[in-house]
Image 1 (cartoon, rainbow, N blue to C red):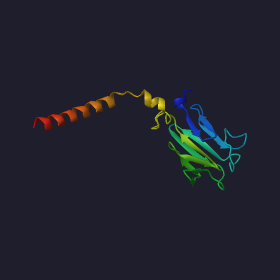
Image 2: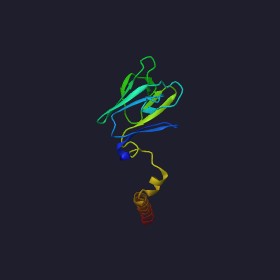
Image 3: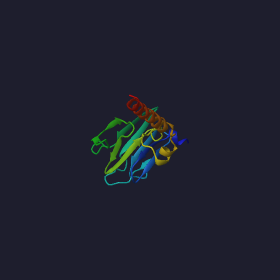
Image 4: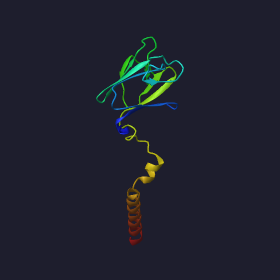
Length: 140
């Protein structure tokens, strides 16, 4: 499976890959859950995640103790990149397919691999501007 086609749920303690070949995942603390989430207050089957094309929907399975999205209790919600899913005291960040590769946060290796010509062009333009100012001041 191409990792770029997968979505992810990430926390500091856990990471789940949501492969493109699957459309439905149950989240909870029990062995019956497709994604076994560890944390205080996580129900055995807490929520389900469904994918329909590019749409991702989170459904709480226990109305008395719903999952939260971005801090708000939610029975059913469509997810977008960066949404924070709360199950008990566990928080998972949702990354749809391509979100990691399209992220604005660049790694140090990516920063070093960027071309240097834009900086060189800016330096050249600045030098020409300074030279022009000096020429106009001295030549006057």
